[in-house]
Length: 303
Image (cartoon, rainbow, N blue to C red; front, side):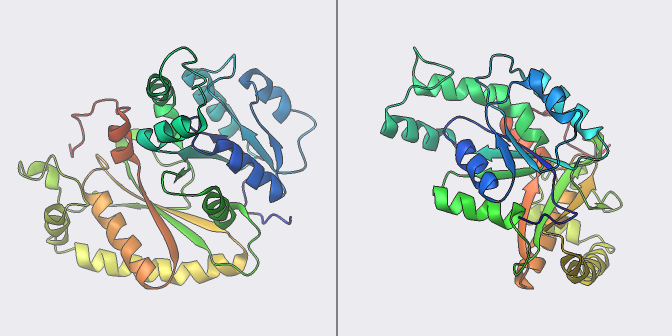
């Protein structure tokens, strides 16, 4: 496979047992990545040292590894980020607890983190371990309603050869209090828009709610901003596509990552989809809250 300059040279693949991590590793291997599954974290620095690998790498990280810990994996991700000549992405293969439970029941497998307990206990234990890792993911693919074939197709959209296929666009919302998304190509600040956080009736809602979206849209600057943002993105996307980029990440931020950035991200995603672009959405802080990994779940707003 001929990788473009924008393709990641290292993909870390993780996720809960039964979600499809092994399928993802094999799919990346078929696309030309050198694939290593169940890699002990202690070996990662040696693997990435001299001599520097000449092929793109796909590394599977499993919570069953003897030296696995949430802290150790986050530390490894931070170390890899500091390697200037390696473009790294963290790929998280996710799945709902109920679907995982059904899969373990159908295959009659014991959960690796609960060999003497119920599969549900193992699933819950693994979700707790991986929650902070999930929140750090550059790309999250939920396989709850995907077949292995559909998962491979989704991965091909992101990591496969770019010749003859459309640019894949990912629109993210985020909180500036928790830092920029690591994989963002374009970053826009939405903090100038009026903040629904200060409206008691809207505070607990998020930007996907019609009332919140309407409140944000009521700012006199909102519609001009959305129009100019869409014009800018539609100007740039064909140029990025012509350059050979296989994907583009657009990050929209506000103070808490709950209201303004979410509303604008939803609006931009809908407009790009209507224009025919292949586009997906991620709301980082909403995912953190859902996973129970927010530093302070009550502190979501707009100071």
